[in-house]
Figure 1 (cartoon, rainbow, N blue to C red):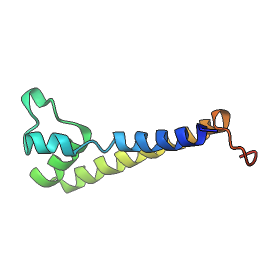
Figure 2 (figure 1 turned 60 degrees about the horizontal axis):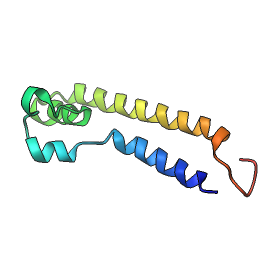
Figure 3 (figure 1 turned 90 degrees about the horizontal axis):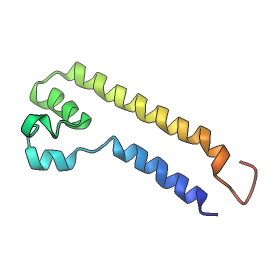
Length: 91
């Protein structure tokens, strides 16, 4: 009975994992830390767009992030038929 809640939280956690930005930005501002330790994908996207003004490249990075997130979400919904139990029906 709790599998739909686990599924919902798994989808939200998968999407949120790609949006990890704020902590790295607050700590390192416009640098990426020692040896680019905080150069996460979103931090790189931000730097390309608003530090280097490569808006086209940053847009391509954002679309790639969207595509990967969508693929993972679709994968989760595809496999959910096997492990998520809904008490009200066959869905």
